[in-house]
Length: 87
Image: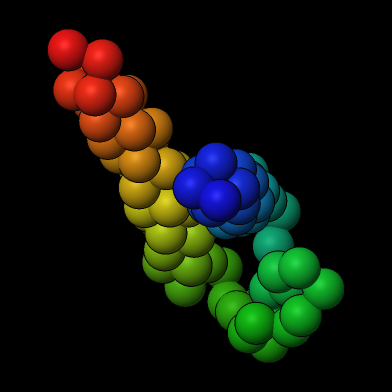
């Protein structure tokens, strides 16, 4: 059960992080009217101007790192608990 949680956290973190990287990369290609931000098929925000796009890119990037760090923490905790039961 914990392994499933670790995999789901890691995948969700990768999706968020990937969206953040995508927003960083398209930042220079946004026109004067702005762009819409979609995540997992849902429209998150409409008409984000070029100036505000870096805020959303940073938010997605950081929010992607958090579940990845939690998944790594769970992996380390499992390893410590496993080593403690062996000793």
